[in-house]
Length: 446
Image 1 (cartoon, rainbow, N blue to C red):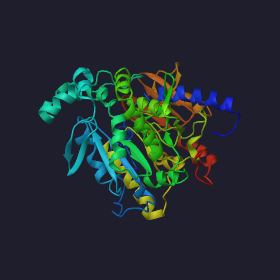
Image 2 (cartoon, rainbow, N blue to C red):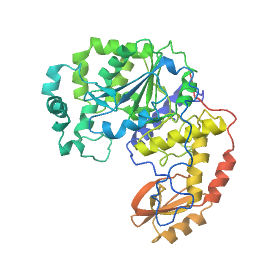
Image 3 (tube, rainbow, N blue to C red):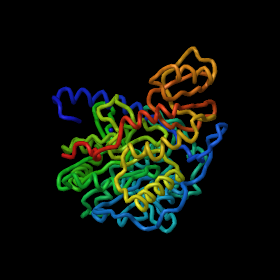
Image 4 (tube, one colour):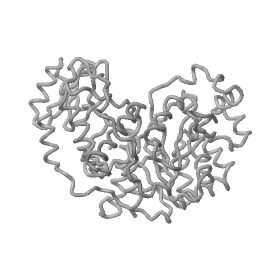
């Protein structure tokens, strides 16, 4: 779901439409499907085997990584489940990284920093968002309650009944300021979350095209009211001058920004507003940075201002630990066996998504996210026949006793009340028509 030079007025209108679409799409959450076997049964799509072969433990060439500080954000209710996998995968080859949470502790010998330690104590005492923080500050993890782990579906206003989610918005500004203090000589600060997968060689190739001496703020465009900001879970990047400007704003306006944060619900939006106030506007980066996992990606979409196929794929979001490890192994094998460093969206489709579809073109307990409702189908076979009769239909899903079809292939996710199918030969034709990319698309870099 990530600008050619046309008139500025037309570009602004197109971007605004895209922002509205993207914001609603970004509320969708689901899990990346486990990798099924090459001969997966049509009665089950929950196979859980790993990619064949173990990659070498060596690190790929990462030119420029020494000038980057990777900043990971997490929380006490998820850190022990989501952070450890990164130590053996995405953070293993990173010389400079720091992890911020709402609770200071050690995980596998790595210090997890309290991002909220510098917040005004009066704010912590009077704002209800800090109830969970104050509890664990006094009792440690023993202070956690069952309700702290309760989850809910993400909405257009986040997860207002989740204590950890409500506290999370307070981390962005102090975390950004502390990251600058942690490595003041870093040229770039790369912010990710514990369920984000970054492709480091691809990211470094992208950042190399920007002048890090200028104030750059790179991220997937999202909008709340008048504020355009980078979606936090997709990952975002700040050059040193940009982060310095944000830190200066926070230092000068702490009381005002604490009140603003208290009245808001999205911390990434708060940070985006502070940057905009400092004169640092967002550099639109979709589809390079994604708030989607592999199952949700639509690599053939032509509805937005960019077509993903030949664009670089820097980050995916909403991943489990196993899925992060699988993607890391996938990239390691590409590097060792094919000397491939840059990851494109077309690579994701050709090398992962399409083989998954072709190996099991009919799946029970699965939803491939087809979205065009067909009201006259009363069964899975009816749904298949309707799709087959439409020459542009490549996938169908019969979920909750309703048929849906689609003209763009997506892998989808497990679903108890769904069965899905694809016409893999039609998808292969679409893929062949797209062809190989002559060069990676990096988007605008100035």
